[in-house]
Amino acid sequence: MTKIDKTKPVLVTGATGYVASWLIKKLLDEGLTVHAAVRNPDNKEKVGHLDEIAKKSSGKIEYFKSDLLINGSYAEAMKGCELVYHTASPFTSKIKDPQTDLVDPALLGTRNVLEQANETESVKRVVLTSSCAAIYGDNIDIQKTPKGELSEEVWNTTSSLKHQAYSYSKTLAEKEAWEMVKKQKRWDLVVINPSLVIGPALNPHAVTSESFTIFKQLGDGSMKTGAPEFGIGIVDVRDLAFAHIKAGFKPQAKGRHIVSGHNTSFLSMAKTIIPEYGSEYPLPSKKLPKALVWLIGPILSKSLNRKIISRNVGYPFKADNSKSKKELGMNYRPLKDSMKDTFQQMIDNKVF
Image 1: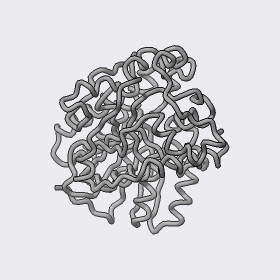
Image 2: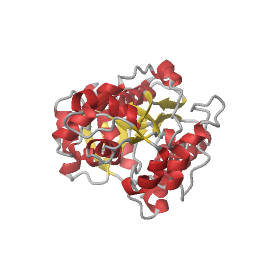
Image 3: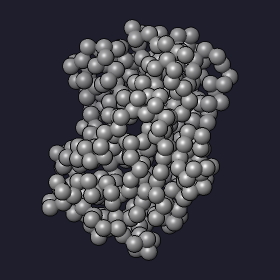
Image 4: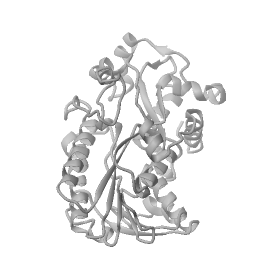
C-alpha cells in the first residue's frame, strides 16, 4: 500500500490537455502544489486557463518546460514529487506518419517519464492515463473476449501501425509501463483506461480537439440522414479526473481500471439531446444502414475506412466498469448530462 503525502508537490505531464486540466483543477481545489509539465510554459494561450483556475483555488501551480521526446526533460518537474500523473500522449486523426506522430510520443514518452521516476528518489507512485484502446482494437474484438465484454485482463492484439494506429500506440505504451515497473521496487503503477472522453473543456481551445469530432458531426448535419450503428464507450471528463485523484491517493489502488460510464452508440448519444436541441440542429434520429455507411463512411470521415466499418459498425461496445466502482468509488453521471454540457459548450463557442 502506498500512502502519498499531500504536502509534497504532484507532477502532471501534458498539463494543458483536456483531461489534465480537470485533474489539475481538482488537485488545486484540494490545496495541493502542482508541477505542471508543458512544452512551452510561456505560451499564455495554452496555460492561461490553468492560471485562472489556480487563482480561484487554495493550491499552487508551477510550470516546467518538458518534452516527451527529450530524455531528462522531466527531471526538474519531478524533483520532490511522490506522485506522478503521466497524462501526456497524442490523440489525433491528422496523421502523416503513424510511427512519428503517434507511436514515438506515446511509447518513448512513457519510457522517458518512467526512467525519470527511476532516477527520482522521492517518487512512490505513477498513475498512467492509458485507454480502453489498449484493451481492444475494434468492436468485433469484444465478441471474442471471455465474457463478451471488456475487462482489465484483456489486451488489444489486433491493432497495428497500419490499422488503428492510435490504439496500437496506447497498447505499446502501457505494456512498456508494466515492463518497467517490474524492474524496480520503489514506486508502484496504477493505470486508468478510459473510453471516449466527453464533457465540457476548461481550456477554451480544447473544443477543437479530437474528442469533440463526433459532436461536430452530430451537430453540423454530417449525420442528419442517420447515424452509423457504431458502439462506443463514454466517460465524462469530470468523472475521469475524479478517477485519477482516487488512483493517486488511495493507498490500496493497484492495476488497471476501466473508467467508462456508458456502453452506448452514436445514435443513442444523439437521442439524449434531441429533446433540447433537435429543433435547431440536424441531429440524427435514426440508424444508417451498414450498406450506406459502407458507401458514404469514407466520405464522412477519413477515419471511417472500409476496414473500420466492417469491424465496428453493427457490433456493440460492452465494458465491465465494476472494478472502477468498487476500488475507486466511481459513480458515473448520466450520459444525458455529459452530452448536454458538451454540446452547449460547442454552441457557445460557435463550433456549428
